[in-house]
Length: 425
Image (cartoon, rainbow, N blue to C red; front, side, top):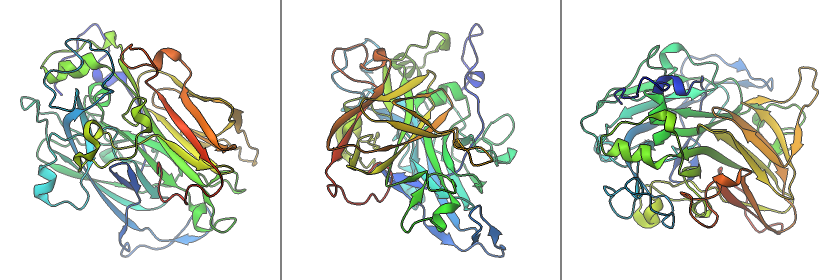
């Protein structure tokens, strides 16, 4: 968006900084591993971290950037004129920007996604040493046709991005309205990363252009025990897991979203969030099922398709992937369950001599631009709460009752839930 920030505060470009990552796709709330499109022609085999020879499978993904409308919890108290936004079409109440998964769509179907932004953006998963071709199409802003905002993809924490594809518009390329750009990545380091638009990044990140990406380790190709999956190349199986759940941690400031929709200017030094979100939803919406943004069946949550509900069997090893692209520190807590933090910012907490530096705790702090990976062993059947330790972040717009950054861990007896086929299911 054109730079209308005031001189007395930080610029949008200076508010949020970082580097980058790589990643598969979620259509709706279901994480889809991108299919191999073809064998990479003319490429020689390389030696992966597991010492197994691999080629470079080619993966293709297509995302579209646009604006649209979503629904924060309907029982939140009104905050006139900011919330609910009077311009919002029913059943929605909040204006956003976002990315959509349009992989495999015809050009006409892609164009039809203009004005239908999704928050959070699709979760994507790739394997180490994949060759990833990710096309970004800029569909423009339906609510603000007066603006000519570009969009980029910045893979936050990814150390292998060449400047051309890093997404910082001053140093690389931005995608103008009506055009597209294909990014190329080859990830070499497993871990939990995130991505966001870096064009007018303070505004575009706050408006919802944030998503998560996982890089799966080479160790998965030669597991230490049959059928095991790992979060990292640990060498000893300590990051093995049965189920994984990921959380994009953000806040939403209703006044800023209203002002964007109504052609007004924001002073970012007044930042004062109204909602605290996991995967684009506030409790109790966090526990609603995954949805499909192409279906109206989800109603108000149509364009917030990713559930944060954790369901597992007693004894399961559960991997929690946590990424923060908000502007506040958050400390996710769960009572009566020990969390073992195995990685910070996509780096395994293990020394070169093999010494582990894992941390056992019940509260994991994640600062802006940071990621954490933690594993817990599911206790006996029952329900547990995973929530932000700061109680003031556990409401919706200052209203009564629980809300905000909270979800449930539902533990069933062994065999209650079938094997997980993708994250967050």
